[in-house]
Image 1 (tube, chains in turn red, orange):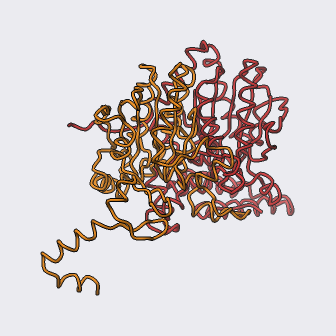
Image 2 (spheres, each protein chain N blue to C red):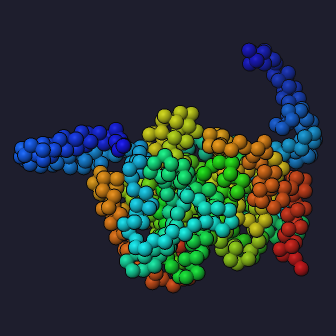
Image 3 (spheres, each protein chain N blue to C red):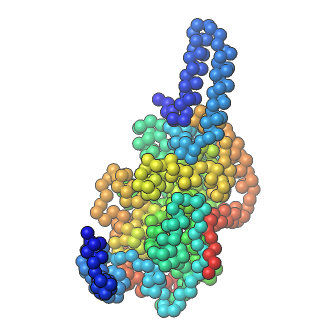
Length: 320
Length: 277
């Protein structure tokens, strides 16, 4: 079943009307092409109108849209000959983070990403995209593998958070994330991260320390989910829309703070309306950034990655 | 009702009462009433149950640094309100008043039993020791100073995690502090991380976990997810000592659990291993 967000409903209604007219044409041979064309023009105008005025909370819902393309959907379109590799060699294989070798425009790359599930069964297997320590350790193992053979790393970020359960705590979820942050800073090959859905706090950052961080226009990136923030601030998770506003979690905010380097456009009405086109735009963006990074010397690459993160933050200088 | 009862007291009586209250403290662990003088002499550790109460940054510095050797650095780096976040300016003022500090992290140099080090100590009374841009900057600068001077660095953490009020900028301090830690790692500059009650979330999942040696104080809350989130997420029933220093020790995430009165000497023994010989 398709999910239709509240603000998408007027479009869904027009879609239904257009569909009905098309069926009439097909079944009874009545020519409704003019009416259809008029409705389609309305639809596009309405889409533009709605998507021009999205609130941060609308964007949060879009980032979590159940039909939004996930990492594997992007991998299928963007790369050739993806060979998935499993396991962290220490404990197990985490379905919430996938990774493997692939080709991008005839160049070998290592691809890693958080993966959510489409149906109930897959959602459970993927733990809703919430990785455990073994997920972060698998990611790091694959990054080191890429480093060993001089292949760049591309990561896709889409997680509500790292898994907060007893198992994760027992196996050192904090240590796993912290180690990734430290190791990714010094990795000798280029890293490009793309935030494609939910950039959920430390769980997202654990695979998103990169030379270039790109973010799709309806993705979000936040230190805490709006619901959690509202619960702390106002003891009321229902005030999440206000919290989303306050947290400045949109792609354009992230660009303004220097956290991301580019906002990647999505097809009109969001990536879920045209996953193929969305993937093509991401592919072009990767192709735009990767070659320049590959031309840099290892020392220059690592130094600029260090500087990129060293300079993030806004504070004051107090007069004493 | 209570207030009315107190309101009837004379000024002199109130002062006498205050003095009496000052003389006693209640242990947060065993709820026993303790002599304040004993409590302070015992470094805010309960002499009955051993519960380690939170120690303000200045008191911890006094505990660890040799007398008159601590020289503070980067005191001018303080928080801004880059998001214009609701109530943040107010919380910053309260944090300053509660802690008597300009920011949640105090950094500087000192000696520990004669060994020169860089020391950074967080204070929970300043917005729960949370890490915003200023705290991240002070940690990074302290690490860079350790790198430049080739002195070991000791960081004592106490923090609820990344500071929500600075949004993504706080989150990025995790990467920033780990970037500085990566430089220490490469240069072979020793880094000892001391986890005190509580060390959580974004701080534990960044610089606090990547020390060459990780020490924790007994009973300290040390974990990733806040208790509320963790409680909701539990499929497996958490053990009674879940997210304590002892739990982390048992699971291999902490090297040593050290009682406060032995902390300085333990640090000295570790520092001697790194720098002596």
